[in-house]
Image (cartoon, rainbow, N blue to C red; front, side, top):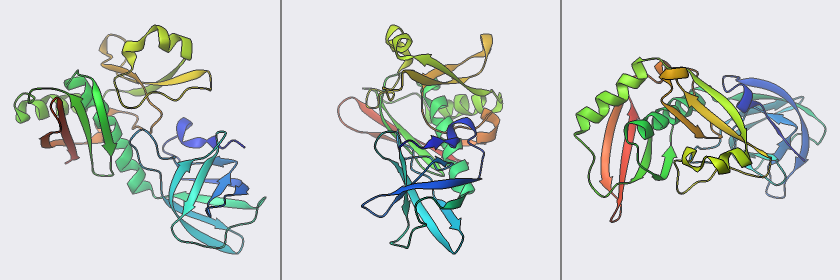
Length: 239
């Protein structure tokens, strides 16, 4: 029972029709295709609404189920559309677009701080990365300036796919120590920022991103916190 992840091919899509494949024991439902990103890699699941003939429910989040299924979780216990019914999905776009901007901004942060990433989290207005960094980073204003310089270059953000064997042959593509790319499908999705000689980043990622870095807007470096002997947590906020 697999759900087609429409958000991978078009993260800007805000509505879509689908068929209900199943209900879960926990009160969620599985569709044959969805625009709702399923929680993973530090990025929250999407929210929005489902409409069908005779009903409507708010969707609080989406999570990964078994065998490639994506489970939509209602905001509260509700009567679900029957299996086989056609439903209309509508995304909470402002929240999703915030996730896209912040997620892409964190890729840029990993460029200006080229150290192993030990953790991270994404919100609609800010996000953070934890770095394997024994000493505090350079002056915050300098860091912020380098980050915003990459935003204003308005670099293209595109995707590529490689095989799992190709990733094994290029382990340096993986920046995150705590989260490894999902395996089992035979191929790995890469997110590229910049192109040709202007490429600045290429790493495995299953999240949603903006098309160009200029869409991120002004960024502000927030807290820089010490987390353990060798970890520094750096927060980035949308300006």
